[in-house]
Image 1 (cartoon, rainbow, N blue to C red):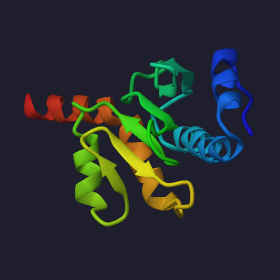
Image 2: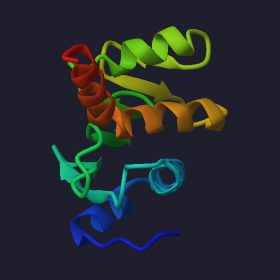
Image 3: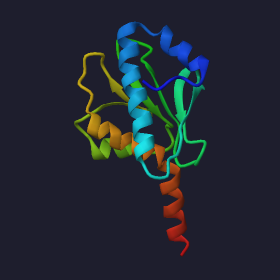
Image 4: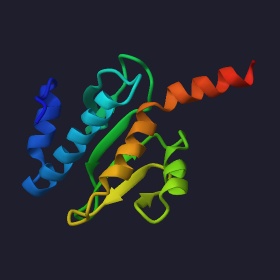
Length: 143
């Protein structure tokens, strides 16, 4: 497991119940792995935003912030995306029956759900390269 650089993030993970912490650590590990294997993302910054572990592409500015946390109600957890980015709608279009979604902002899982790793990796890569893709699309439209 990757060490925590930010002690506030480490404390947030430690505060989760054990079963929830294990699931969120899986997401955290996946996040860093996807970033490392996705061209142009660079090193992730891990911090807390709104009290939630959050992953930013500060080094390159390539992507949108991704957050992970337990659900406020129930035993589930989620990967949260910026609601105005259109990312969740893209995920719905690509994977309509694979994930459960919460509005325009999250992919939601139950503690006992099987994690569709291949599809989730793709969604995370899209989020972590969101700004880079938007810039490319904008520059092509001006040519």
